[in-house]
Length: 343
Image (cartoon, rainbow, N blue to C red):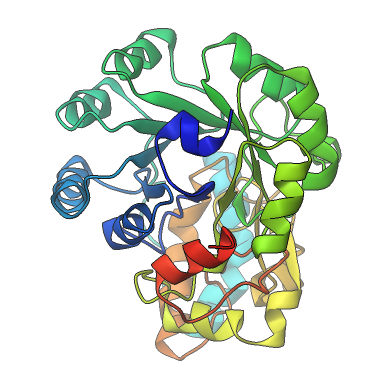
């Protein structure tokens, strides 16, 4: 089955939900162009989510996706927090600022409260990262006819998602920007590239499979479809669109040779995610045992990020990007979508 038939869209392209660099405007533009626009919800308060959904549904009658995280919030660990702040202490001293008084994450998992809120809007597609919510919450989402998508980074995760109720699986290759969707293991040696993962997942499951990671142009889309994908999910190529809220520093980095060098890092949030190399990754090493569990690493980093960015520096910034930023163009999201589909 094609993605168009499965989701009722015109083009086999899903815009990846990208928390922190977009709101409803990008999702609206992609949906109206015939793809599936996505709204990332993990960093939104209930009030902000309601406002974004109202804006989205007022501007498109086409299918759209809302995306949530499914992590289990960790218990605060004083020892780990102290270790993390000790690692950051030289930077606090350099910038002449004090570390924040309290730890916090700023990223909430899907919950009954969120389910109640989105039930008012009945989004046609709901996607999840880091697995799936509890069976009762999943059934609640499906009760209004929503299609449920979730990311798999291994064959085991793909099989688990199919067995536990996912209607389609996003095969997230190692090339993809942002957070890895891994949830059955923390072992990064299990992570495969898109061209290796995709055909294996297609053979292993019966539900539609969507390719993600390293896809930046129509040729990449065609290759994914040839390997059995129903469609593709693309994020990085939308980061320079005017509808995205990507910061000036992030945009400048994407347009520079720095976009050629990305790495998986847990320094930003405590969970592996792919972004452009910056000072923090260079000096502490992109993967470290110092940060507390996701998403608690973000709080101690916040003041440093703000201080550096005020000076025009991205030393501690979130610069998510996939390994293939060649599709990044300062073009309207509708045009990016059509170009990806070869339309």
